Image (tube, rainbow, N blue to C red; front, side, top):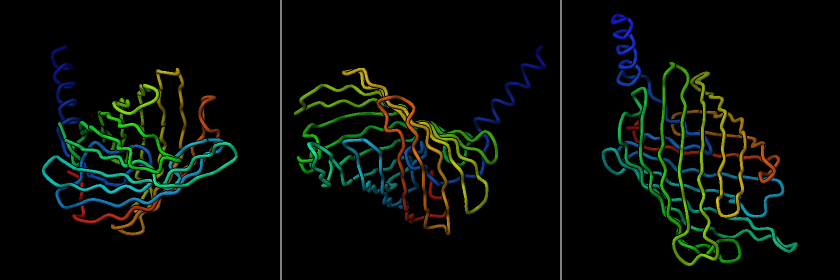
Length: 252
């Protein structure tokens, strides 16, 4: 019994504390726990379509930058689409600013855990964007228990805090399993959803996805969200191009 317990302790120690080879190909919807190294980052341009969805970010744009040990900042400035009363508007959406602090582990370890507070500012065009200030926070968890398999999990909560018409309270969750098929390609399966408690609405989609890496600085991603609940668009299409700069192993 003691011998078995000792072996289990050794295995647990190796899983949590030993190093693995890192990767920095981030899925479209699920974010890493590990922040970018100081001076490294990326710029992401996307395009999205969700069938029968009245409001969504049709052109997401995000900049991520590692500015200090264990820390990074990101700024998202999307173009938002709104379909209402037979009219379609595509205008600048609200700016979202997020901070990431690595609590434990890292990209070269078997796990990473970070805390991620964020704020949404009502800077967008009022024809497409809400006028409320929003605050939120999330816990991000990365695991790398098998050599070619990674998982990434985001669990968070967000709510408006000022200038809101309705007090929405949203718990959101993202999960991605990534397989390192080759140096140039990574298939991904994401589960993306949220629960809005004010109206009792649950949204959930499964997103098969592929990431292509022609070289160290560029990534091309494509995914097909498939709605699972009645409140979720039945099908969609997401594409994203990412330009990366800085160190080769850019994650801390």
